[in-house]
Image (cartoon, rainbow, N blue to C red; front, side, top):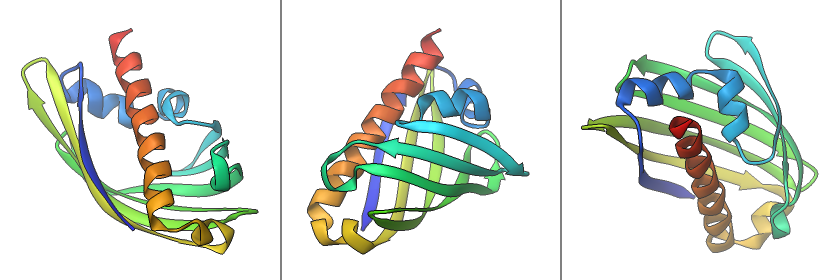
Length: 145
């Protein structure tokens, strides 16, 4: 499954970069995040509880940031699993400053397995987009405070 898109956030690029690299504030932005723990440099263990149709349930996994070029871009790899299945993916995240705003562009691919794979690509893409929209709305809220 391929995912790509962009969101405009109400802050300068440096502020957005700082937020994306602050584990405590980032945990507050991740939908369903119950725990985000630092396990190494730019490496996090995460526990999520999601409540969306076929992907509802508890998930544990890891997030790792690599190839960081502050404050312009980085790569992110994710792995997660729960009773409904697993997900693995990688994305490139770019931050482009436009005045007092930042456009965040992301492009990546994810693969899923287990029961969640049986819901089909279309349903998974819709669920992923909903999670991303909520995440970026939470980021925007954090940046306004």
